[in-house]
Length: 282
Image (cartoon, rainbow, N blue to C red; front, side, top):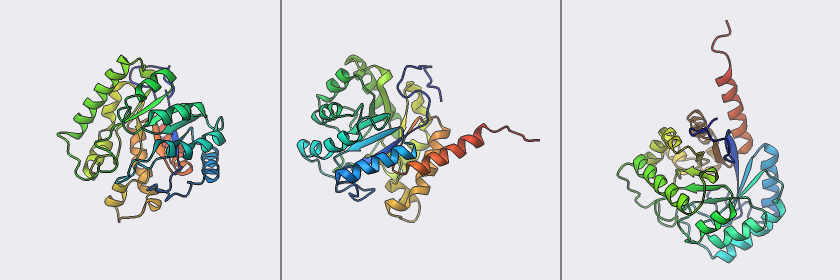
């Protein structure tokens, strides 16, 4: 997959890349704190790498709808031993945080990328941390904060509003010496969006290729899948997750944040084999 601006210098040119989720939290929506013990989290991360994950995304603060912010020191305490255990064991390790101090500690202990649900806007120091570090930054759009983001999300036009937000953030990053070769944009499925908002974003995801930077799509096990089906719990939303991811792949998305790495990679391989096969075998 080639970026629209033709850049080959971006850390994530080409693709697709699969980002495996490692939640070191007791209250994650998707895995119910299964990996809040750091030894289990390390084992889980290594398993995801073995299954083919290109990126491990390690987070110590739950950002599910309704989640409350936690103390930064607690967040750091959760992820530091996991980072130490996984350092150098994956091509990329991103720290999933909106706190500048957590970013700094994570980069010291083995992370080489930043994933911020607030797009470096929650903590005013985070943009300076990112600028100094010169590492990939996954910039997500979110309306509101996790504690209240799903209460009544409203947009004039969800695609245009998010597009304009990214335009402004990219200008801001340029002013603060964060080059586009480090930026990945994520429209933030489920973060201050209704089911219809999510569908519109996924349906029109190709529009965000205009920025000439990679797109990250995070649909894995999210609540809109259950809402569109039979209300299945997160662990039973794999099929819906794959359906949305495959659509994203067909639209030029380069990076996918997933819980089910092995299944996603298998689906991508079959899809790409079908896509690249001759039109006629006659």
